[in-house]
Image (cartoon, rainbow, N blue to C red; front, top):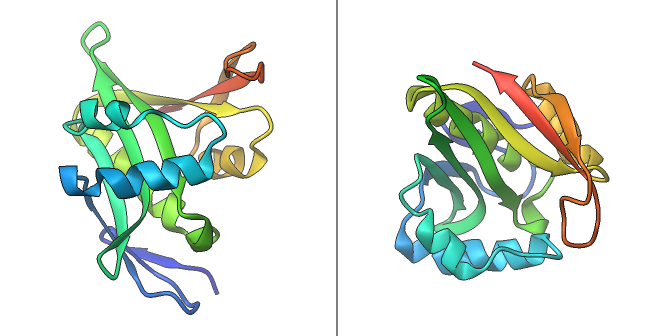
Length: 163
C-alpha cells in the first residue's frame, strides 16, 4: 500500500516517520542546499534559494525536525492571469519513492492557484522519466521542447497544467 496524503502530511507505510509540509524559512536553507547538491549534477547556488525565500510556494517536507525535500515555485503576472512556475523540486535520496515529492507538488500547486495562477509550467529533463510521470499524474502535458536547455546539452520538456 502506498502513502496517503492528508492536509499536507504524508503518512508512509515503511520504516520512516510521517512527513509534514510547511513554508520554508531561512533556517532550512542549508538542508535544502544539501539535498539540491545530492539531487542534481548542476545544482542551484545557495544564493538562488536565498533570493526565492519569499516565493509563494517555497515549501519543505519535514520528518523528525529534518528537512527531507523541498519545492520552489512562484507566480508571474501574464495579461491579467498569473502563471505559476515550479522552478525546483527534490527529495533526499533516502526518502524517494515514499510520496514526498507528490505531496510537495500537490501543496505547491494549491499555493500557486491560491496566489492566482491560471496555469502552471515547469521544465523537466528529457531523460527524467519518473518526474515526467509524476507531472503527468497531476495533469501536466508537454507543451514544447527547448533544445539544449541544460548546461550539459540535454533538452527540456516544458510541461503545462491549466487551473
